[in-house]
Image 1 (cartoon, rainbow, N blue to C red):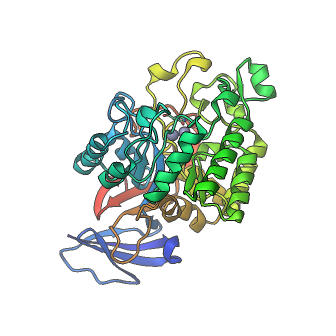
Image 2: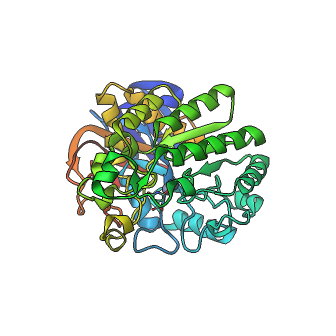
Image 3: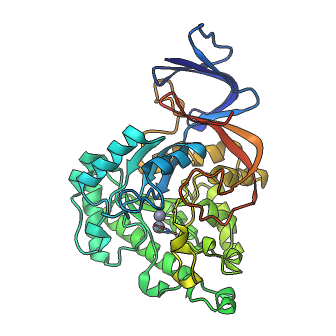
Length: 425
Ligand code: DOR
Ligand code: ZN
Ligand code: ZN
């Protein structure tokens, strides 16, 4: 099977390519990139004139809810949402039921994704059994089964000695520890950012210190053990500063930010919008500015969605009781592209943060159109304006505060291994 994507503006930051060219795919791999490539009569030709051709995007932080919570999302619906968002690879978190803390679940996820999925799925398994915080998973087994990292995402690893030992083992296996950093005692049950607004709304506050204190500890433990620490969804100015300083000291730390944490402030919670309830919480304009600065100066390694689908029955209740999280796979690209319009990042930098840099942060071998690489490709229409609605979103859940917001930019076609996974050209 041969396909040529013709006349698109090809942007591959990993190879420093940005030019109008053709991309030729043979047997699911990138065969050739160049100008005016010949294509045989038997070849599929995709006309990308006026469109941007990039590596398939890579989201290193999603919740696919499978097994156990398929009423929110499953591997099929979640990867379909990924493809619609331009993503060809996702790394999925282990807070499923049962938890992905063993190779049987890991194999199930990989197999189901291969058989029925619309994107590559790289499972992340838990750090502690059942994410209960009291005994470590079989890290070697899980690496062999195909996991790409360890995370108790959704929860902080409260016991510092436990995290230290996890880092020692993970380091031995050359695997990252992926931290959801919120000190539980400081968070103290807070459901939104702590400040004047939480007081005004009468909601319990979760201060930035819950994150920064936990990240500070985790960075020190990474320094002690030599392990690779990847900090999830950073939200506060002080956290960016901690990561920046740690990198300068040579600590092996990487981090990601979500589109919601660089787009929205706590003001989105006004009106008690449960779709703006996330962990860590949306913070202040100052924090949002710090996220943008962290993206600009390279402190932040990746944009990752923390796609967290929830059924309306998990959300439709008093703010304090509603589940944490919002979907993100289908709105990430247009929200990230706003950073280009704001003059904070170039288009190439945004694509890099959503592809090879993200993949590199977790050591996933994806995110480039290099010759011989898997033909994972996104074709983007940067001018297309649209709105997220229940009808056009592929995710099984629709918990988003971005409903009816005008979005600019859309993946109009997504190919994985050279096969079309999403098509709205
Ligand atoms: O908002 C969030 N939702 N943050 C998390 O860390 C967990 C996630 C979920 O699983 O719903
Ligand atoms: Zn988390
Ligand atoms: Zn998460």
